[in-house]
Length: 266
Ligand code: BGC
Image (cartoon, rainbow, N blue to C red; front, side, top):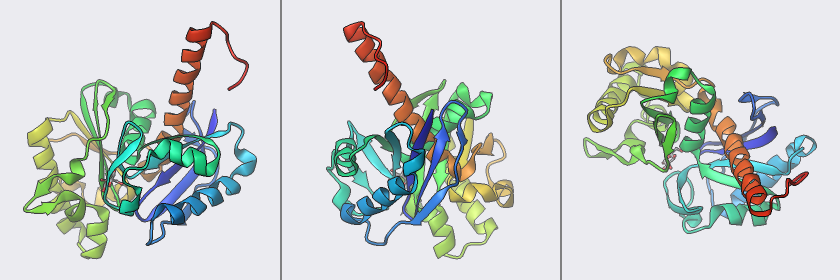
């Protein structure tokens, strides 16, 4: 199915039409700067603008959104890179109401990880796999044998008295003007900590900096199996679209189970 996926980040809001059967992006990637004032009232018009931009491609009236916050039972419970005004919002219902379209919202890193587990290398479908997005903050998704444990916040770990989100993100690299070696050394400390805690079989890196992995991989723990996400920073868009597709399929299955009627369309 061709579905619009939107990846809301602290720096950019990226969107594209995704073929959720093949996991490929089938339109241009439309990017808009995240406004410095990221209260809901400034983000909603951007989302409306995205819907308008893709209006001719919206064959299915539903969208998937990756959102940079902890979302428990559809509610935002904590947020670091966008306005605190989002906290407490029943995010899926709220955006559905504001945008007037069926939508599903999940944590941005969970979305990116979901794309990897579904469309990435076969090897990530088993074992203990950690997907990290290195962008404005650090996002994380944890999988065991392909099943997600949602809403992990490994960016909230403290290293040398600093929150990893502020110390190891791509933002930290840019704002502190770190060389690739300095950045790699920080990431090395962080990944060793993750290794101690979780003994991962594989660590997959996404987010803005994953395109540059060859420049710093030599500084990272050599005993860890580390690689870049299959679609790098595009994983988030793909996973957002995939999440709404999965949600819709479950909803449809439930209706068929409850009523015994196979609906023509939903
Ligand atoms: C947020 C996470 C998010 C990550 C990446 C962190 O600051 O707490 O929920 O996944 O940034 O955007």
